Length: 400
Image 1 (tube, rainbow, N blue to C red):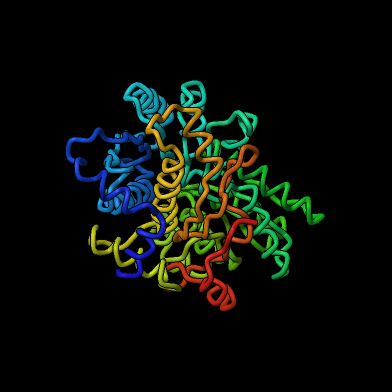
Image 2: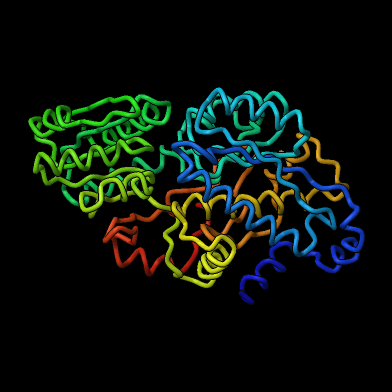
């Protein structure tokens, strides 16, 4: 914990000035930050850890003075994983006068709300949703949409590269019909094409499907030797359980939702061995990560259901605070906060990565491929697929 406190003080900086200003913190106006995500409903498995990661960071930041003596205040909206509810929540945040918003776990929910933030000139930082189109909807120099999660256009090639290395080149893709599944399918197909490959079978399905044995039989008949799944809910487990019932022993791979409880708890033994892209694995591989995991456990007294969601949200909150310290007069206009995010002057030594100039006028995505590792389900938990990744993870990566 001492190490964590050291990083907090080093990270926020200017503590002497802050201490002087903090004397009147109890009467100082708060700095309102929006937070939106699926904190109830079927996507809450990763919405709640996102919420907890932000709350943990805000508590730590306020403990050392907030923004120059002004506490950070969260204005929270639950989007329930529903695009229409998310749109209303986003409009409510804009009306509440937040200076920026952290949010969204579901690509389809985020997509419906992007224009609210863009048109209102309120920076939105996305710590969970990975759909590639989200940070590509608006031209980068004008965009108010930032992201600290790994977009699917880097996750898909990362996983495909691993498949090719393992000799699994006859790929069946199973993608849901949401915005997430649609964008993910395109990214997987593009990644395969870059390797001169094409999926031997593509299956599409709606959320809520309970039986995928028929499309699995079709994939098996097509000669697939690996299943690449792209969905965020229990459907990943439906695929795994279907393979088990068919006694079709091929690996299942995918993006980060294969690390969710929906999959691991829902598929149980059938989930073992599944591989997925990860930015953060909940192992105390260095002091920063050990301190974060300890602080999270102490505050919330529970295991992190989706560690990536919590860690990315935690780092996001600090990055936003770093940006705010670039605004010395406390005038948080939308353009001022946007410019501050694009020009964060100090390095933030985070949990997921070491963030040195994470954003710029032309680049709104903080995560690059070198920050990814391959995770593997083993005995009901996610660990490193490769020993060398565990060793490399001792050193937190910087953006390339």
